[in-house]
Amino acid sequence: MTSSPRHFLDLWRMESADLRAILDDAKARKAARSGWPKGKVDADAPARDRVLAMIFEKHSTRTRFSFDAAMRQLGGDVIISTSADMQLGRGEPIEDTAKVLSRMVDAVMLRAKVHEDLERLALASSVPVINGLTDKSHPCQILADLLTFEEHLGPVKGRTLAWVGDGNNVCSSFIHAAGKFGFKLNIACPTIYHPDLTDLARASEMQANVVMTDDPKAAVRGADCVITDTWVSMGDTDHEARISAFEPYQVDDGLMDLAAQDAIFLHCLPAHRGEEVTDAVMDGTRSKIWDEAENRLHAQKSILAWCFEAI
Ligand code: CP
Ligand code: NVA
Image (cartoon, rainbow, N blue to C red; front, side, top):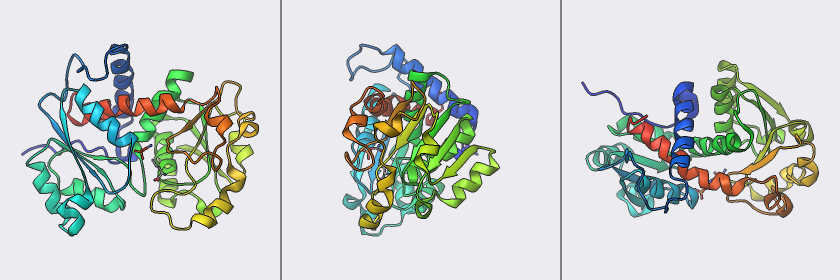
């Protein structure tokens, strides 16, 4: 009997020790190749002779390029397609797609419109499946964010992170991470755009320290890190209602000044400058968004190495 593949679907399903090991591996791998050309393969090449398929149902810059660069640096290769270019886009069942791809590649990354499709793909796949963002979660992003946090401020355990804005897919993965990594997460969002109740229930089950408020100042006061994201995610249709509901939730220098003195600002990007965040914060000294974007690559490599059982 073959063992089930190591899927990377959501942080709440993962063991804390595995997540910690992935983060530590990312730190070590990044340090080991400091100053190297970006195309040079890591010494241990844990994805040598492996191929990752990437399927995109939505747009992407960071996820697409970081996974591609990650596989090259790990010594492997990639095949990339939009779902629209595949028979999947014409209605071929995702389970059949999973079975076919499992015969051709060693892992599949999916950016899906509907989270359940990711779950269905994983159930039918005999190779690891990675969540490259769904409407419900974005776990790869959070590992890059925590890597960035720890590079600048040290261990995240016991620290306070403040999420300001939409209780969206990225927020949900932060909720999962709060339970797994042991940090406090303050969330400030308008009541109608609160995070998924299932995720808040998961937080309680994990005894995660997650505090909800509709007051951005209360959430940010004394926090080590302030995080926001677009007010209108891919697939959201109520654009105007959102812009007006989120207006009091813009991250500006005044809000950042309430955080801890050495607090950092993170944003998964793409940002809508002048909406959820001002230019001054984006381009200011507290902003670590470019490190964060780079760290998508380093985190991705270690997620892949874990999926390939090299961690
Ligand atoms: N942060 C992030 O996932 O960016 P992309 O949508 O560009 O992949
Ligand atoms: N919440 C955003 C994240 C983009 C990386 C979205 O889903 O569009």
